[in-house]
Length: 87
Image (cartoon, rainbow, N blue to C red; front, side, top):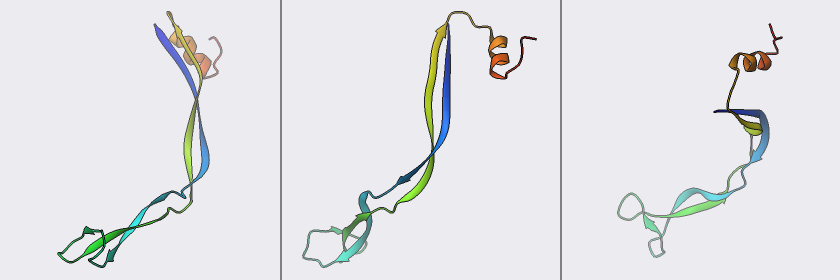
């Protein structure tokens, strides 16, 4: 059995970002709830913020055809894909 799959790949421009994430750390006073950083008297807290918006290009893949067949003339498939006549 043979499985024939035809997919279309197309570059798509998207703007991504503006996600609320940890963007850094800052040192804090000892009396607050923070985890210990490097050194015995260094306390760190997370600094939260939005990630910057950036434009990116990603490939979008769409499946156009999926077909299973018992027999396959591979030469005919190659000729058809390459636009060659039946010679």
